[in-house]
Length: 425
Image 1 (cartoon, helix red, strand yellow):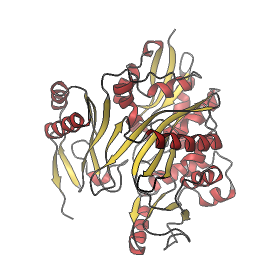
Image 2: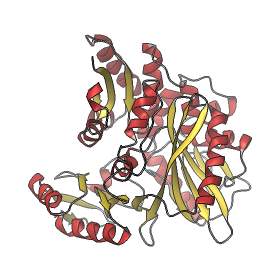
Image 3: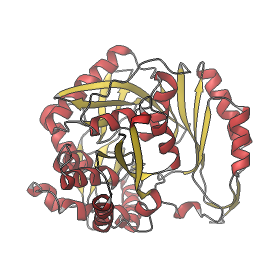
Image 4: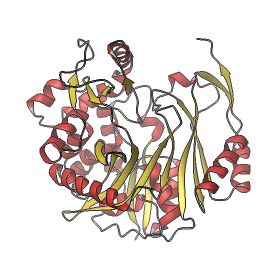
């Protein structure tokens, strides 16, 4: 009999990747709350948990696993729901140790030296960075995702302006994250900080990469390294590219750091990804962030290059099994997820139609497209956007080399018609 796997926030793109897994015939996938139910105008954590639990308990059959591809609140709802149903998995505290950015830095301090100087900021009262943290720096809420409300600042005025913008928008994530913290026995310094605090840390630079890995039966495994390439003169991402161009020796050093951090916090039977910077001029590595999930943005890249998406890691671990990923058995030697962005506000009048997208897929092989906006959307009012741009579409591309990769994206960008009205500031 197929095993019943419930997927929190299942959307069309990720369902397609799950159905393409080599063993997909062994599973029956069930949506457990839609993406839109979870990421609405408000994120009501306890209400979402209760609604999900009722659906699981009313299911006429055995629940074999609960999985999810998204960041908070999905990533931290998973250990709560698994515990309630008696399914295996790492405890919630280990997830929160990584997802609360200040707590994560404190945990990193215990086992590694490769992190920037940092400190806690109260956005309601503080006017200056913490002692010992120098400009240029980044200030961001202790919980956010997709670089929401993360600001790079170079002086005191920019710092204060950033805090004003954070105060105006922090509640959307901070309020449900505060509700989550009620489920954990927090250390005094984390309880005092709560979810409305910010982290200030000195800016780090260089080549940015993400290590994708998991821990199974006590052993930490790194199965891929992905480059994060930014738009020129912007902190917004242009693409994620796999395999990485990072020197092997550097990626091995990063893997050693990842082993120390993951073993320090736990996360048994759980996928993770860790973001790093490497400065080639002085050969310095710095850890940026630990995420308690595989990156669904990277999943299709592994499918195109290795022959199975990294969803296989998430799924098999949730069932208590070794992920056993293939390697270099995909259709393409290189792949990337590209971001089609706009850098000024506007109102969407005409996004690409399904027919126009289908034409792109027919004409350009190795491409899939996900449009992020709808007609009538005002870009500045959309959630899950970074601070410096607005994502119009995501484009996954497989290619023979980087030149073909870039050429294909240029063709897609021209072929996807977005009509957006400017807004006078």
